[in-house]
Structures are given as structure tokens and as C-alpha cells.
Image 1 (cartoon, rainbow, N blue to C red):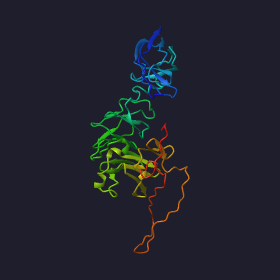
Image 2 (image 1 turned 180 degrees about the vertical axis):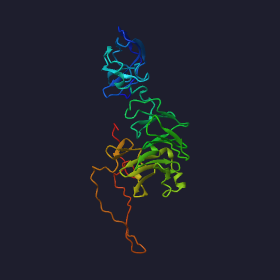
Image 3 (image 1 turned 60 degrees about the vertical axis):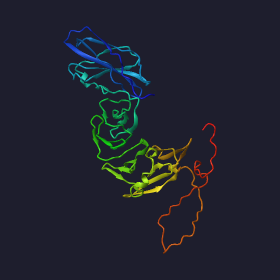
Image 4 (image 1 turned 135 degrees about the horizontal axis):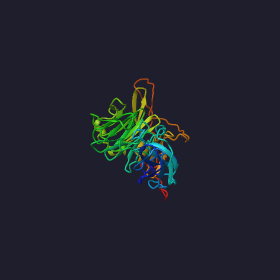
Amino acid sequence: HELGVTAPAVAPSVSPSGGTAQTVVRAYVYTYVTTYGEESAPSPPTVVTGFADARWYVSLPGSYTGVASPVDRVRVYRTATADNAYTYRMVAELPVETVSMEDTVRDDLLPFQPALPSIDWLPPPQDLRFLHLHGSGALVGVTGRTIRFSEPYQPHAWPPSSAYSVPVPVTALAVFGTSVLIFTRDRPFLLDGVHPSSMALTPLPISVPVETWRAVHTALDAVWVATRNGILRFDGRGFTNVSAPFIRPDQWEAFDPTVFRLTSHRDMLLCRVGTARGLAIMQRGDGLYMTDLPEIARADEQIYDLSTDRTYVRLGNDIYELDAVDTEARRFTWQSQEIVLPAPMSFGVLQVDVRPEGRLPTDPAEPTEPSPPDA
């Protein structure tokens, strides 16, 4: 179903009848609740004066109209003079078809009833982008130049109070623990805090230009960013240019930042920096190592599936699993040319660039088969 629950637009009708005790003033609201326990913001309030011992009758619409959510219940709340005037307490939970009820909860017992949690819970914005999970359990995303948070563990509820504006357009987000890195085409911002309602926004004094959200990825206990200046690593203490020891600045300038793509593959970071260059970054102990990975260069898209720990790439209309774990490895015998060394030497590592026939159908050096009609 569509995420979010529309708040009631019509206030409840309240009619006190009889009574002889002291006069009290009560405010009533109601909310809609889905089969999953998702609760809407409250209806407009109805404020009524009557006797404390009167019979209080509440009329409800008896139906739900709004975002297509599986609403099956209504919850009725009220305030009391004995309680905080701004705290609504639940007096009934009823089927959504209910059109009338009697409130029998006494004022002295009302403070022990559950409080209204959803006073400003609105459905998620329609133009929400760059969705991530924050360390507080809230979702975080972007609308325009505003960073918005959901209520923790309530992805259907987006309070307007948990929103933070930045002065420039946002191109990407990344979450590192309880911190949110906000990327632009110039300097990034850091939004830090343990709860969405109390975050601190700080501009960072470094240029990290990001052209596309695909150039940002969280893996290996860090946030990685492919920028015009190289591949940067953020570990909470600051940014480090990890590609500088491997690729000179003049070589990096030849890459197009609009096609940068970052993703994970097991214990590696994969980076597509152009249509002819793909890189794999590996972390071993305290060191980082980089090697070429041509398959990534030819991929139109790449995605890491966290639930299965598998990486997929799209080549045209086809999707392939990278280094598939359930595919039997192909065996072959390879022999190099004769290599003459100036002295006896033991090889600790050998890198062999192998391009077996049919490995990548889109490789221009290999024949391609026509796509099926429904591709």
C-alpha cells in the first residue's frame, strides 16, 4: 500500500448530556490506524463544556478517505482539566466504521491512559529522494533543499519539526552512524544528532563536489565518495583521498564525474570512473589496495544487495550477477611467455588479465548475439 496515513479532515461531534457535578472543558480528537499499527495525525479538535459526571457522546465519520492505506481502526483522544491541557489521552479504540460512542473514562483516570503520539505525523512528501536509514531508527531523505526525517521506527510519519534546510541544492546523502553527510556540487554539510528532532547542522570546510548520488556509497566502515578530485573516504574523523597514491591528478581529470558509480562487492569497493575504467579498492589490515576491474567500466548500472551479499550489474537490457557464488568456477591451464629475470626471485602475487570467450557479451572485442524480441 501507499506509505502514510491521511489525517482526518473533519472534527468529531461531541454532545454532553445531563450531569450535576462541576463544569469541565474537554477537547476531543481522533486518529486513523492501519492494520500495521500506523497512526495518522489527529483530526481538528472539538472543544466542549459540560458537567464532569455527564454522559459524553462522540460522533465520528464512520469511514476513511485519504492515502490508499489499510485503515481499520479509529482512536479517540481527549484532554481533561486534571491533566496537561496540551496532552491528549486515548479513551477508545474502535472499528473505522463506528459512527458514535460514549466516553466513560473519568477525569481522575485519564492521566493513566496512553498519550497521543502522532500530533504532527504527516505522510511522507511525494518528492522525497535519497532515502537512507539513520542510526536513530528514522528514515532520512531530501525534498528540494530540505533534509527530512521520519519519526524513529515509524516510516509512515514525517513530522515537519524534523526538517533542516541547506542553502544549496543537494546531490547525495550518506549516513554514518548518527551523522548524515549532505553532499552538494561544492562543500558538504554534516547533520549530527541521536534524534531527528534535535540535529545540529554544520558546513564542512572542504570541497567535495558530487555530481550524482550514485557516486556515494557506505561500506567497509566508512563513506566513500567519487569526486572530481578523486575517491575520498570519510570515517568520522574527516576525508582522505584514497586514490591519490594510485592515480595522478592529471589522470583523474580525464574521467567524467557524471558517470561515477560506487557499490560494494563482499570486502571490496567497486568504482566505475568512466566507460573505459573500473576500479576495485580492497582494505587489508591498515592498508588500502587498488586494482583495475574492467567489468565495472562496461556496466550501465551496479547494485549491491545487502540481504544476500551479492552484487549485480546491468549491461544493456541484461542483468548479471558479479562473481556469482552459485556458478561453478571454470578451470583452465595458463602458461606465460618465458620471462628472464636478472636474479632468482619468488613471486608473492601474480595478476593475470583473462578475457575468456563469451565472458562479457557486450565486449566490443567479442561477437555479440542479437537481443530477444522482448528484451
